[in-house]
Length: 283
Image (cartoon, rainbow, N blue to C red):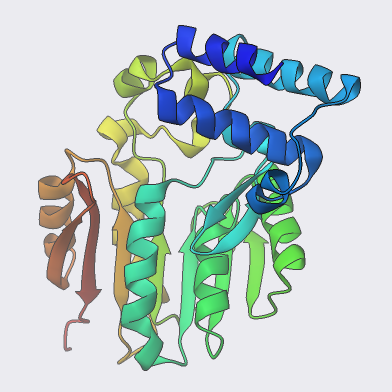
């Protein structure tokens, strides 16, 4: 009975490996068993389970619902996080640079870190879990995002992170951070219309799109960030960006007093992160 769903996925453009993976993930989710548990016994679905699988396949192929939303969770830096529409789904390219940032910061603890546009809390929680001597603040304007971030915090039992509702720095009272990170909206309105419906129909547009060709919030963070760094600290700003924005963002950062400005590429070879340290001008 499962073979027909595999065939259906293949007919909708899934390659052999991906089709098998998707069916496997959905069946694991339905039976609430890991892959090893499924292999240890004959794979038979009850009537209720098959109807559930049919529902999931329809959501995937007809409603264009992201698989992560169907499964209800995603792995990020080794943490299992709840994901719910319309909160942005954590991306592998974000996980990539966050893992490298954690390695860089481990020997520099204790730190105070601000994560703007925190969404599901994926970045803040990964930092908090892996930097236990540090304190993290995650901020977002969306109440739905903050509710999900707090749900993830409780699930992971993380005590060194606080989530607050704030439009960027608006409600951030503390001005003593060593590091500020952000994965802000950076897609232009034009790029938004080119996106697949699996993104446009399900994920919050506010978490993806910004004015000025996607640079409005990035520039605001760069400009206002220096007011929230602790004096004589690491004063490191790390921003995820769109693949075509690196040159303009780097130039703007330097014009705002940041030094050691660098671009980091993702595994696909695309510019993904810009980082730099703020050095206050001597009076």
